[in-house]
Image 1 (tube, rainbow over the protein chains, first blue to last red):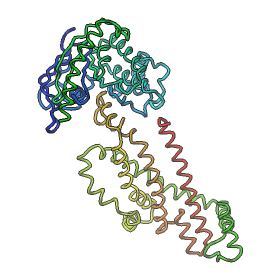
Image 2: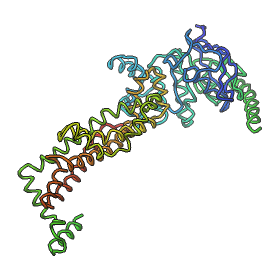
Image 3: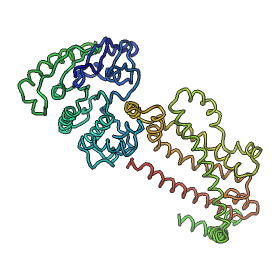
Image 4: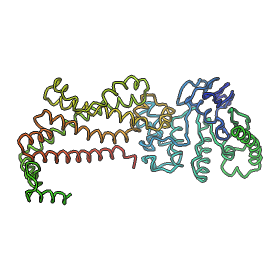
Length: 259
Length: 237
């Protein structure tokens, strides 16, 4: 159970003269829900793009489920902030896309897609096009699409940032439920401390210029969780602890930027 | 429109315009009824329409897949660009002499004129359209396991289809220009032939009739095309 699912070994990434990531080492256990927390521009998304294989590291290597990442591969399913649904496909076709490109028959993939559409609470919307859906529904489709593909790891890049506060709360609860059911390894990016505390089993705080991981905190809030956990004493204790770190990091990067 | 026709008719009736230069609408209508009755009119319309469709379909059948490959592959683009730059400025008329030499006054010659006149602009439209596909969608597809080929077929083609179709509407109009010019030069039937033949025999009402028919046929094809487009792009509504 505690085998390493993602292993990041001495990874650096440079864009021209800009050092986006500097010597990042990280082991993510199978079944962990890791939240990467940091202010904008700290290299969170860069790290995610390296794990999916969209980008190649300048130095170091990344191993996912005992295989080195050398290109884009469906082992890491990505949920994008902007949903990235195919507008010409229905909900059912969107969710079944990964199975289609794998060569699965229509009947089989529709059956699987149907199951995950129901899991994210979109039964009855199978034949709708994305244009007809709200932001929250679109993001559910996007999550179902990744789940249907049965990846080793699910990566989410600020998936709820574009949603209103109430929809966000509902989707956070749903994601927790999905996590508890599927026991997938999840890496989730956010700049919200509350979101990090609510969802994670482990929190990594990143700093900018150069991007690196400065703090690694185990989130021992009991599972299963829901929004009510935010009222507990332990929650507030963790929150103030994280806030101190984040605050000093943000101040530091602001100073660096204004210089 | 009606007022315009009324003034035209009145001007002819009052003898202000010599019917050899411009026949009254009633004469054009009469001629149309007569030729429509004996079926010769429909024959000309169908002949031109068939040439347009054959040439247009052949051009798009090559331009769409080729354009998608050229739009996505930098290397293919670099290899093909010089040829495309050479072909693009050539008007369809300039192909008429060569096509007559190669194919004679045949149907193939008409198709080839339409093809040569529409292929290069169609290709440019398709290449442009592929560039406007959201790169995030391509990433999402790759992330879900799509190969290069699958990305082209499943994402870039449908993603650029709205723009390709609106380009094709322009190309279809261009195809009509090509076929009329080909028929004006050398043909035994078709709307271009009708106009030219009318002129030879000083039958101005036939000339005007031919022009009216070109206009109507283009409007009808445009309408049909729009219906097909709405059907294909159902997801946009």
